[in-house]
Amino acid sequence: MREQVVKKVGNKIIVFSANTQYDLHRRYRQYILDEVFSQKTSNHEIFHSEFSSLIDNVIKGFNSTIFAYGLTGTGKTYTMFGNIYNQRETGFNPGLIFLTIQDLLQKIS
Image 1: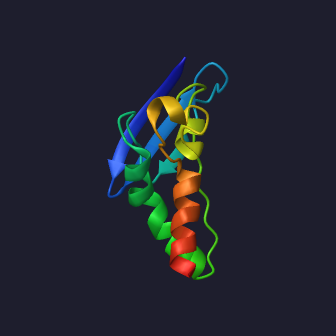
Image 2: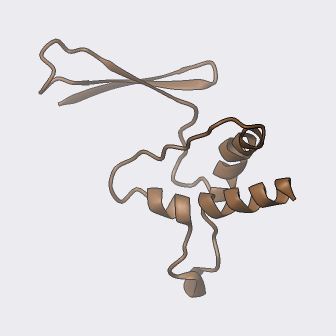
Image 3: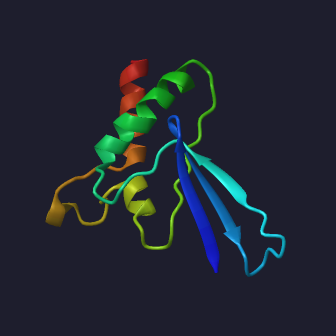
């Protein structure tokens, strides 16, 4: 059994999670997230919300990491790569990697 408490504090989302089956002391683990997106959020919206500001920092010499987390089958690969396999059926919907490289190349040229 897993208990979770989600709170929004300022512009951060904090998830407190305890796995009572394995953790006899019920210690909570804390995860601080910058943003949580719904399944209806487009790759372009995610990119403009989170990625574009990171690219500016990378150009200035800072390291950046994007961590996609979720259950199997929830769309992490699709979000990162887009629909690279079935473009004929649904049209090209670029993933975050494509959008990031495209924006990076535009900004450094």
